[in-house]
Amino acid sequence: PPPAQFATCLSVRLNINTITMKLAAACTLAFAASANAFAPATSGNRATQLNAMKDDFVKVGAAALAGAAIFGATLPAQAITKSELNQLSYLQVKGTGLANRCSEVIGEDTITPKSGAKLAEMCIEPKAWAVEEEIGKAGKTEKKFVNSKVMTRQTYTLEGIEGSIKTDGGAITFVEEEGIDYAPTTVQLPGGERVPFLFTVKELVAKGNGPAFKPGFQMGGDFSVPSYRTGLFLDPKGRGGVTGYDMAVALPGLQSGEEGDADLFKENNKTFDVGQGRIEMEVNKVNADEGEIGGVFVASQPGDTDMGSKVPKKILTKGIFYAKVQ
Image 1 (cartoon, rainbow, N blue to C red):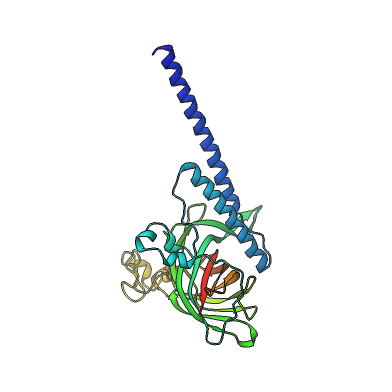
Image 2 (image 1 turned 135 degrees about the vertical axis):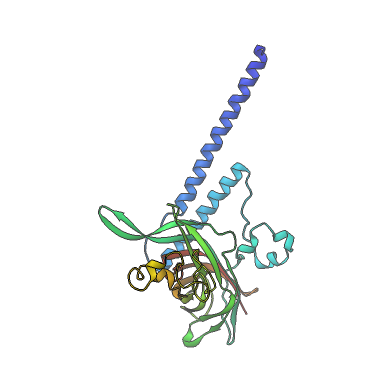
């Protein structure tokens, strides 16, 4: 090509390369900030862990916003109040991710529940997950929580939970009674292993540290964790809890009752295991006019046992919650 056209093409290529390098550098910084935000928190008391989690959420949100702005990607749905959410139609919510998010509460008021009051429309939204693993180092093994990423689509939030409030002894006690209080969830460890578990707060009895909901109010308690699978589930060999085969049909010689049957007993004998978890919650926002409270939570619970054949892993979940005092 003529010298003038060649110079123009060269200039365009140099500009494109420069823009590409800037985008790559900005992307690296954004993802580095996001990774640092999920660094394991040091052990401490309940308030310290909850405050550290709040800081993590701020860092993660800023990093994700920066990364999305660089590439022009679709941003995650931002938090909105319950009244704003109720004004949206189905088509306005569809595909935005708002249906999987808890509403935001504005205000720092105080709500003292009366006799016969209850918590309604409770929403519990996980933000971070960690799985307890045995890590070997210098010839020794120790258990540590390893950060993991969720593989389940946006259906892992608990919604519409209701329960009664008791104020015996001058302190609030919340007893969970009904609602969408379980969500099958799967997370993936850095090595690629996937860990399924039933995220739930069934039969939760949470005892508080005061007679009123206000910023700094804390409550926590134990809850039941049903089996990830029910008795009607059939494994790849056609075995189930209440239906299907009672042994692996392709391996009759190993299940004759003489030798080898013990090795496959747990695989053949399907059970519906019910574990126990614990959740700690802290209120940081209260709107007395709307009767709303919001805050953060930390929950631990066992994972899936594959109907009795595996040892469950311990799952740690952190996130936010919303509820209405009625």
